[in-house]
Every structure is written in C-alpha cells, then in structure tokens.
Image 1 (tube, one colour):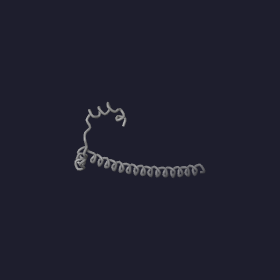
Image 2: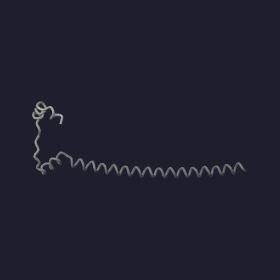
Image 3: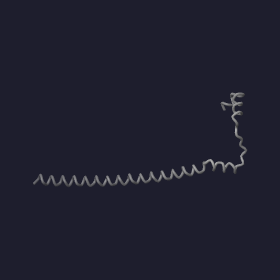
Image 4: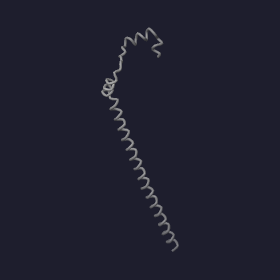
Length: 94
C-alpha cells in the first residue's frame, strides 16, 4: 500500500512538473514570437528609410536639386590635374 501511494504521489509530482514545463515552453515561444515581430517591424522601418534615401540620392534627383541651386561648378580636366601634379608636387599631397 505504501509503494502504491508513493508511486501515486510521484506520478502527480511528475505531472505537475511537466505541466509547468509546458507552460514555460508556451511562454517562451510567445516571447520569441513577439521579439520576431518587433525585429520584422524594425526591419520594415529600416527598408523604408533606405528607400527614402535612395529616392533622394538618385542621380536624377541630385541633378534636379543642382539645377535649382545655381552653383558655379566646373569640371576639372585630367590635363589640369596632371599639370598641377607635375608642376607643384605639394599640390598633389593636399
């Protein structure tokens, strides 16, 4: 009788431990899913920011912005750069 009672208590104890472990597993799975959803939301926000940056820094957008600025820019030619390097070695170091 004592052995049967001991086995019954051990079975109840093991059952309670298994229920607690299952509850912890469900809780950890829920937390992992929440973190995964937060990561996906952050990733979507980063993708939107990258898209905004790409739109603003596209060559046609930069050209349009430069037209509106009225800057007096000149294109350096390869010959002037070469001459400056040959004539003044210190200019190339700058």
